[in-house]
Image 1 (cartoon, rainbow, N blue to C red):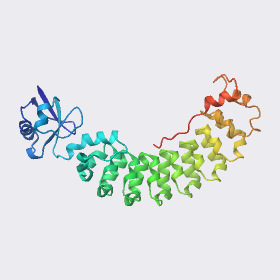
Image 2 (cartoon, rainbow, N blue to C red):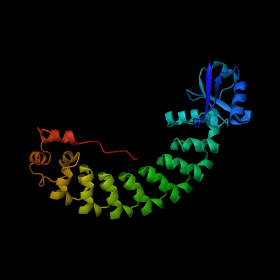
Image 3 (cartoon, helix red, strand yellow):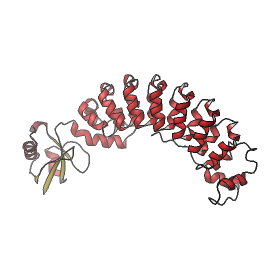
Image 4 (cartoon, one colour):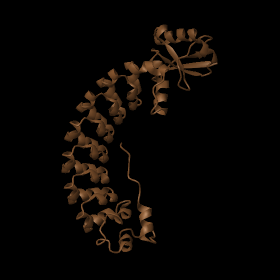
Length: 313
């Protein structure tokens, strides 16, 4: 039976007939990759598991193995498997060494940013580790130290990857115009996490509603009555009409702009004034010719309503 040995990088470092003992394999691989035998550990290649010992070597039937130069790093595949399948459970004892092992945790967060939640207090305050984590998953900012959640470069990296990460930034950075603009351009929904002052900033709110129309809900009262902002919002998502001021919900151009957007007509039945839509059936027929045969306004409402987005990315 032939055995192939790879590094975590994927490179094949040794291939040949299966040695009778793990010690023989360790010696052969050590010669091939110029490593010390003492530092080499081997893992099954097909499924994550603990490093192999002589007893396990007798039972293992894998034709491909992973070789690592650090016993703790050898826990990485099993650790990543745990991260993927256990959101709320505590790290099992056998995987605990990885919590404070910088090299292993760095490798982990580069593949699963939210693995940072299992890092030690010291590593959650390690700027390089946290930067690697938020670049892979912005929401990993949640698990960073308070100091790094107030670090402008770290937070910018996080919100550029995931706009919703703004929720976990410090209060000071949620009032930073550049940071908030980066967040809402990634996901307009993040406007709700911005400071009160920035939710009243026309440029910030416009960027948000152009990305996610119903972010208008989180704009200041003044900007929800701003015709340019509301038009941009309803042109992105017809549902945004419900968050416009009373005056703009009866504005003919705004109502029509909303009606032509996906899902707009269903929402027109709710927020728009009865005066502007005196004959709802006729309005639907006018704005959606030949799109759907309307049998009743109630049925049309059901066809066009949809749940609001909860995607933070």
